[in-house]
Length: 122
Image (cartoon, rainbow, N blue to C red):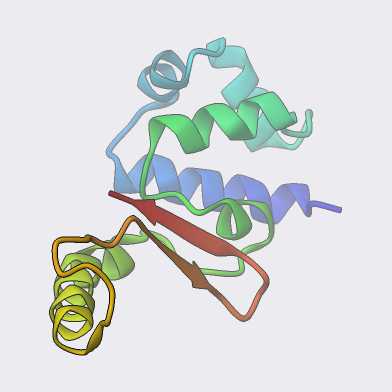
């Protein structure tokens, strides 16, 4: 179960990070401003639709972090290292792979200890 008070704190952190007011945040994710106000005050619980709108509008927000505080926010640390790591993997696979030398990496999946994962596709 989501702790509403902690969720509201994390939501405020997201809004601060993106320098959003309740009005601009609600406009960006496509909900009424009162929905933001009610969630921040603890009057209402966030719906799945509300959470999914946040995740689709703000790339740096991690689902597990938003729901229960586990994980990282923002996710930049992972994204900034990934292109370099992919290049390293591609270079090493070219030198050691017995497959077609013209083949490229199609997908990389990173699994985290908390059970979450990230899927990166070319």
